[in-house]
Image (cartoon, rainbow, N blue to C red; front, side, top):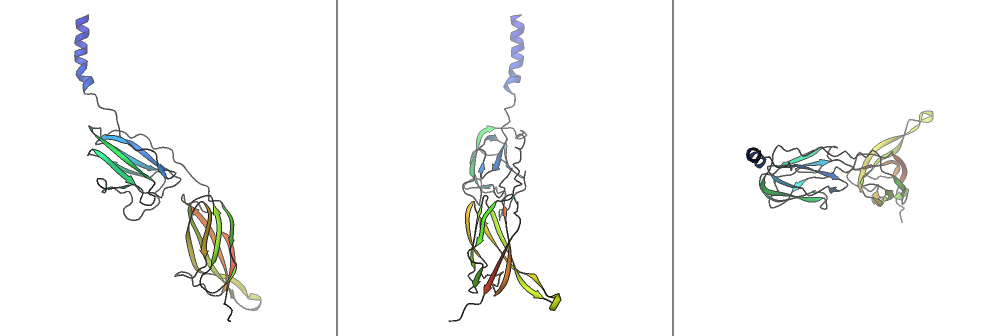
Length: 249
């Protein structure tokens, strides 16, 4: 009986010795302005970055000296679709640095060992998407002046936001059409302006003369709204204002 057991163990030993290593390909989540981990993998294995929201305006860009050939967003960074991925397979050992081209704090490293890995290993399922369907909450929206002189400098627009994103204003001039009983006031689109929006108090220059808004004397209405980084937009806020000719001294 002892000899039989020893013989069986001798047959099993080579099988145990050549058993494949545990899969090390993995995933890194991009969410809330950070990456979920700094992965460690073996040669031939891969890392998959997942944009799971609420913020998808990030790149995965390799850094010098050894990762400069990898970039999820060549050229300009654009918002990624929810569930979008970027995969890199590593066939040389070393420490590889990656960063977001827009946000230097969103960075990390991939540590690749010198041990042969399994190129077919499963990185596992994508984490649940972090859906954000709530538009920004705007508070205390007002103009410093609703009536100001035609100096081209505009006025101040103040507002509070609970989210990052873009604030926008479409400018319409109020003009009269028709005569008598048919006379009416209509809106004529005359320009627009956008501003970067941050969390907290925002103060921006409103109705300033520029390449897309002439800022001529007249009565206007602006339709103001905000869009967060998950592309949720607020309802438009109607903001009437008037530009008048400066008094001559």
